[in-house]
Length: 467
Ligand SMILES: Nc1nc2c(ncn2[C@@H]2O[C@H](COP(=O)(O)OP(=O)(O)OP(=O)(O)O)[C@@H](O)[C@H]2O)c(=O)[nH]1
Ligand SMILES: [Mg+2]
Image (cartoon, rainbow, N blue to C red; front, top):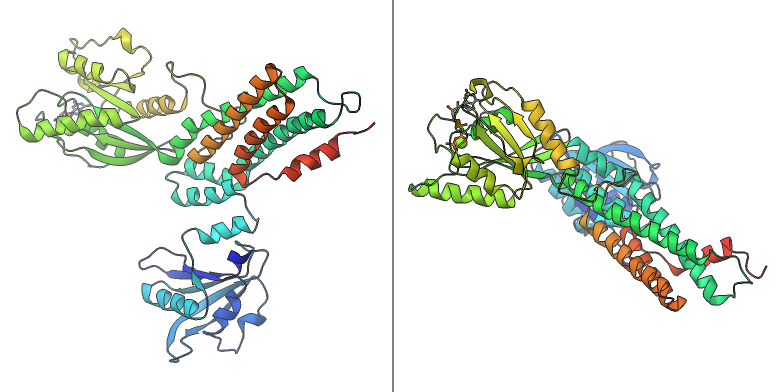
């Protein structure tokens, strides 16, 4: 492949100061390029080094003789490397200058500056990982919680690829039977019956749809869930934010109308990243800044995935509370009865309209009920709510966290649906085969590609043609 003929190099550690900074070089000339500016006090040459060894030495500008840094160089020869090419990693001291100067020497020596993600792209192009695994690498880097990282690791591990491969195999199998029916008469070969074919297509389609829907669930771990704390003024929204974060994030006073701006922070709830927003208390006001605050609160209700609607148990449940409830009635919400430590006998909350919403008693001041609240938020996000059907989880626990995968799986299911319909209407098998191939192509997009050779292999390995 022409585009893999060159050698690429980049700084692999984040910018700024650190203990070490790594320059990584990959490609057929990686070792020779580095040898041009590497100096070992013992006279060692990188070209002579065994694979997967580390060599001590100095980076020296070959033109000026300037000593740039004292380094450890890792030599990893193809194919047992990240990219399946020769890889050199130069461990410099962590300041920006030595790392940059070392990278410059790589580029002067013949390497090309790597594009973002190009090392992983090479791992894919050279066949070490498939596309979905390549995508998992970036998810691991960006994971906000351990659970998100676990899901990404599973994807890198190949669990999603294995699931997709299984679907591809099943689609190939159906395709192969259809192709065989086109090419041979019924008495020449053993194929599935018509009912069996229809059944296999339908089951495959149902399972694909289920996997696609798991994205609603999977994306929550990858991207996080946004939650807006809303309520009338002074109910303890900011106190609740602080209690959940266990830090003094927002200003709390006994004056209603304290919070004006939306205050955002991140909370980890059983591995679920929750982007939590404290908002201004909702009320009629003539204060310009507060009016803007209320506007932002209403916007936050619209944009948030879930709403934490806070009531004040020390005061009677009133029209203002009803208005808040009215505003969040179409959202997934948890009703929080705060100040339960000073609950008034006049506070009565009952709203039949809200029966699907969990109601939790807390005291932000004392820290009571916070675990129950976190559990309620977690369940609200993870388990399908009463209003939401069908269920979002796939039976085997493989979750889709990537929109590209979801779209490809949905496309595959749609093509399969067309094939099923055509099949039921006794359309020519050639037409059905086309939809099945489209379905296969869509599934193939997740891993890379599916070649038609796969189908041919299947026909000849599994069928006893001409028996
Ligand atoms: N007893 C008791 N007091 C609380 C509790 N939560 C908050 N408070 C008090 O209620 C008052 C208002 O609290 P905030 O957290 O500022 O209320 P808020 O809803 O953010 O108010 P605005 O920003 O003005 O809308 C403060 O005096 C808090 O100390 C609680 O659980 N119990
Ligand atoms: Mg506040």
